[in-house]
Length: 310
Image (cartoon, rainbow, N blue to C red; front, top):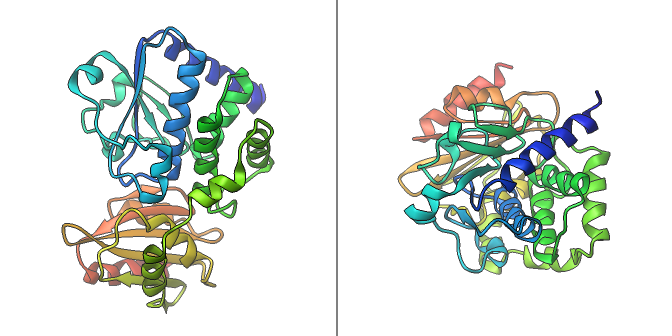
C-alpha cells in the first residue's frame, strides 16, 4: 500500500473521530509559532464548515506573536473548565503534552495532528517527522477528503507553510509541499496580502538587526547571544534571518527570556542531527531543526563543545 493510500485512511479515521463529537478544543503548543496557530485557525474553520453536528470549536493556548494576531483577533487564551471537560481535545503541532500550552491535556485522552518525531501515546494521532509543517498535512487532508475551505482557513494554512519552512528553505520540502501551496492559491488564497500581514514592524526589525550583529563562529557553529530579553513575537523571524547569513553546518541562537534563562534554537544545513543535541540538553525537535533551554551562558560553552565533537 503506497503512502497516499495510507494517509487517506489515516485522514478518514481522524475526520470520523472528529465527526462523533459536538465540542472540540484545539490545543496549541508553548512558544506558539505560525504553524501551530495557523493550523489551529484553519482546523477550526474547516470543522465548522464541514461538520454541522459540531456545536462549538475553540482554540486553547496563549502568547500569540504580534504578527500572527490577524489570524486570531479575539486573542489566544485557555478555554474554560466547562468547555475543556466536555470537548474532544486535539493537540496541534507537537507530539508531547509537555510542549502543550494547556497543561490540562492528557495524551491518552486526546488526538494529535503533527509533524514531529513520535513521542507520547495519544488516543489517535497523525504525525511523524516526514513533513515540513503541520499545515502541509492539514492541506493534504483537505485535498484528500474534498473539504470546504474559506479565506481564513486558507490564510492559516499559508502562514503555517510559509513560516515553518522559512519560505520553503528548510527540512522535508518536497513536490507535495508545493502541490499544497498551489492548492491553496487555486482555492483563492490572497498570497501577497498574507505576506504583507506577516511583516514585522520597525522596532522588531531593529531588535533583530541588533541581535544578529553579535554573530560569532566557534568551529562548525555560527552562534549569537542576546542579553536583551527577546519575546516570542520575533524569535522565529530572527532565527530565519540569522540562518540566511551563516556558512557553517550548524547555527545556534541563544535568546534571553523572562525568568532569567536562555531559549536556544538550533539548526543544521545538511546531515548534522541537532535533534539529538537538543534532547541531551532537555529539549527536542527535528533532525535539522530543534530547541532547548539553558539557565546560563556557561552551559552554552558546553553545548558548543558538544556540537563540535561531531
